[in-house]
Image (tube, rainbow, N blue to C red; front, side, top):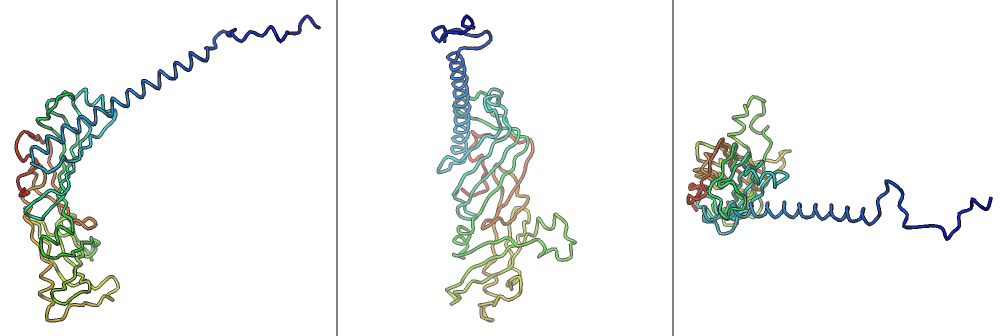
Length: 290
């Protein structure tokens, strides 16, 4: 019995069973793999940031903007896209752009299936972008619109499309052309310090956006009391009328649809198979009056 007993002193910790790796080798393998992942992530982020920066700088110089626009390149993995010079999409946003049509606006664009020229990601300059689909929009904020059109505390709220489609007969084209909105403001210069609510519609006619006041809005339950004296009601109603000459949306696209979104008016356009020459001055759009 004693001949089969294993002595405590006979234990050899350095003996390695077949097929079992040494812990140190496993740790080295894990550390090496993690290091490779970190390097790839940093390369991914760095290449994306550099590409976005060169597009942003090209847009700023072309449009004579006061600051670099925000640029986000969509798609993953980025390194594969950068190697080909082809990208899933590019989103562009420039805030507080001065115009002579609606004060300071926000310019946004979304490009799908994009190629850059030159294609090499490491080039310092982007000369052109080519996109299968381009959606551009001008976003006009209620505060800026109010100041620009002398309605200092203007507020804009979308109304349900049922306002213009009570019988369910309006087509999508009609709804797109006549978007109902609620306009709210006060007129202290006329002694009206209570809020005045007016139902209006947005009508995009060619390259001109009209905000047309239709009537005083009585509220959903009809309980709102109009604070405007009878003798001033026509004048105050007309005060909400706004005409905006939107010659084009970003990158020269013609305006196609207008709608209210929160406290903003948005005008959009769309183009297909578009080439954007960023070396040309004001490539974002000459009709914004910058």
